[in-house]
Image 1 (cartoon, one colour):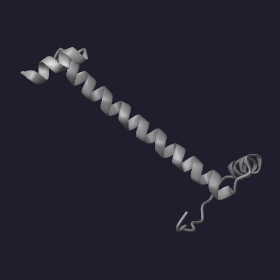
Image 2 (cartoon, rainbow, N blue to C red; image 1 turned 135 degrees about the vertical axis):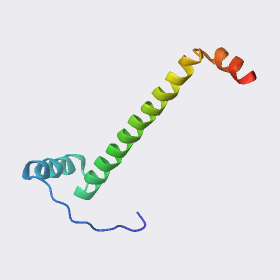
Image 3 (cartoon, rainbow, N blue to C red; image 1 turned 30 degrees about the vertical axis):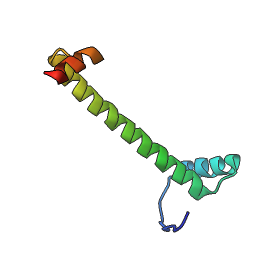
Length: 78
């Protein structure tokens, strides 16, 4: 990591204990465990957003009768 920004966060005692236990079990620092958790949360948010966008456009395609790649190819050629 080229540059780290130090932040102070508050955790419930239970969550702090769980994070410390996870760090110990995985041989990581507490910071690394928190960073992993934040990366995972971001990945899950992006995945959810992707599926929402995919669902939106899939619905639009179905309304136009585009149900397969061949349908899409025919639609794009017109």
